[in-house]
Image (cartoon, rainbow, N blue to C red; front, side, top):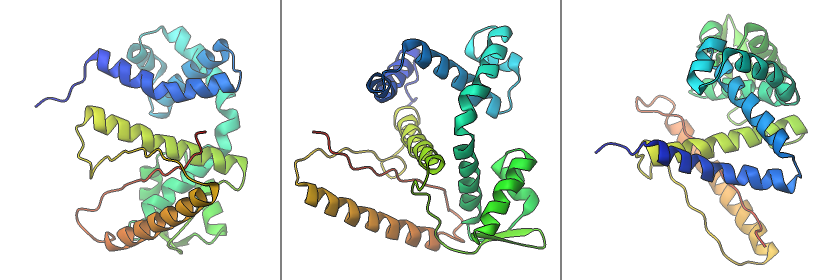
Amino acid sequence: MPVPNSLDLRLRVFALTLEPALHLARALSLSLEDVEDTTRAAYVQMHRDRGLSLEQIARRIGTSRRTVATLSAQSSTTQAPLEHSQRIGVRRALIRLLSRGESVSMQKARDEVGVKDELFHDELEVLIEERAVESVEGQLSLTRAWTSYEGRNEAERLDSLRHFLSTVGETVRQRFFARATEDEAFARVLSFSATPEMIAILRKSIYAALCEGAVKADNEATHHPDRVDASIAFCVTRTG
């Protein structure tokens, strides 16, 4: 049975996923012009990051090359405050790659992470200095089983937000357009009443169980031929 993928459905799903961002924009008193400019520039930058030329992007998003060039220049300014968090994302990608349990050559790691050489080596050096990764004769490997980016500074908080939302976005894509099973893309929201103390207890106990289960699953899958990468996005929020 074909997966529904009409333009109408794509737009409706996109509009729903956009709602939280628009609510946030309203709460932050952002102007419509700021929202439009940021969205347009970021959309072009996403295509640039995938290696597309200005001409290819123009064809892909249905606009002129001149407009794409202007938006690309704007994105440099728009993205500047996010650069540090993007660098942390490179470290996260390196750790994810090396967590597969085997040492990886410097060249393979650089190719798989897919960033410029200077950026790759800069962030690799940070991980080596933090004793999270070691390099021996051109082979990279992890030196500890767990690395956390829990928002100790603004850059880490922005990177964590990007990581969280990318997991949510991929879950939406798989559930609506890839017909993923619940084992492949699971999403639920539980709404209930509780005391602040009970909310804190639930948050701590559930998160601890998730961390323990993720580490155990990762260890058991190290050399398994069916190993796949996975992410869990977890949040607890007072809604009233």
